[in-house]
Each structure stands twice: as structure tokens, then as C-alpha cells.
Amino acid sequence: MNAVKKVAKKRGPLRRILFWLLVGPPLLVLLLQLYFFLQIWWWVDHNPSTTSFMRHQLSVLQEKNPQARLQSQWVPYDRISNNLKRAIIASEDSNFSEHEGVDWVALQKAYDKNTKKGHVVAGGSTITQQLAKNLFLSGERSYLRKGQEIVITYMLEYWMDKERIFEIYLNVVEWGSGVFGAEAASRHYYGTSAANLSASQAARLAVMLPNPRYFDRNHNSSYLSRRTGLILRRMGSAELP
Image 1 (tube, rainbow, N blue to C red):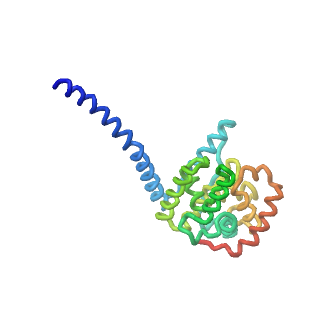
Image 2: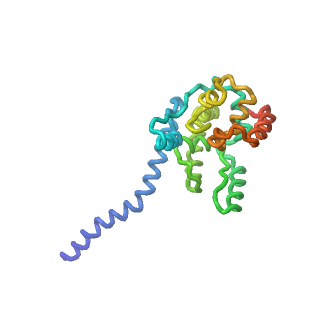
Image 3: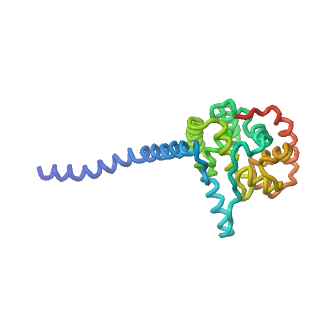
């Protein structure tokens, strides 16, 4: 009888360990999603002061220069040129005003391209997906991160209208080494405010977005010039939220 009790006592802690090994990871994932959900709700009418991607880039810059600071200045949606808004939609996400956060056709094309290459080379991300990644995630490319990005994307679309999503995106997206947001980019490259960007200036900034640090170092890129002309022609048909 005593032997049976001893075995039962040993099994008690073991069962608790097994229980938490099984329940712990899903519970942590659930709590993380709850954090994302509540944080996005807060940002409906409060501006984020920083993002996960901004903090990462600042740490990278400070490894080389401990005094490094980011160039960033929040401006409201109506103080950002419609030229820039149209250029970004034309360049990055032509269906932004219509889709529910994820462009599944673009994702399928990206998946096919990645399968052909044998590794992740394309993301097919919408503006909302890019914002989800910038706010919370790393720059790592993997299907697991892409899955989390999609979950956050639908949270953003649930809580926010398109204009608010675009306003936050325009204020936190990277535009060069340590340069974040439309106002900082406008002053960094053109010495003017985001409200006063011309169509050609806006188109050029939009073209820089997929690889901003490269174009920050290579202002005279022939690709940049060619692509800018193409975006200028497309801007007229871009639908603003």
C-alpha cells in the first residue's frame, strides 16, 4: 500500500509537468495574440511612438555609433501629400482600398515564385501586412512569420478603417538608414514637408520603399528613375481610402 502511495506521489509532479508542456505553448501563443489585439485597439486613437522594426534598426545603428538616433516625426494624415498616398498605392498595393487586408492572389504568386526558387524570395504583402510586420515582427522571412503577419493583419483591419491603417503606415515605414515616416523622408531627401511633395518626388519615394537603405546610398540608380516614371503614369488611377 505504501509503495502504491509513493508511486502516486511521483506521478503527481510528472503529470503537472506534462500538463504544462502540452498546455503552456498554446497558452503563450494565445496570450501573445491577445496582447497584439489589445495593442492595436489602443492604437485606433493613440499614435505608436515606435515599432518593433524601428527599435531593431536603432539597435543596429547604435552598434556602430552609440549616439545614433532615428529621424522620425509624426504628422496627421491630412498633412501628407495626396501625391505620396497615390504613389504608394500605385507602387505597393493597387487594391488597398478594396481588399480586406490580404491579397490572396498576390500571395499565391509569391508562393509559386518561392517554390520555384526553393526558398522565400517574395512576400506578396499588402500595405496592411507591411504595417503588421513593422509594428510587431522581425525582418525574418519564413512561413511561420508570414502566418503571424496575416493574423495581425486581420486584427488591424478589424479595429481600424483604411485611412487610419494608411496614416500609421505612412508615419512608421522605413525610407532609408534611420529614416522613418513620410515627414522625415521628405525632409531628408528634398528638404520639404510631406505636405508639399510634388508628384515626381512622391513617386520616387514610393519606389524606394521595397529597398530603402539601398536607394538611400544609390540615389542615381537607373532602376529608380525608370520605375519612378512608371509610377507617375499609374498615380492618376490610384484610389485613396
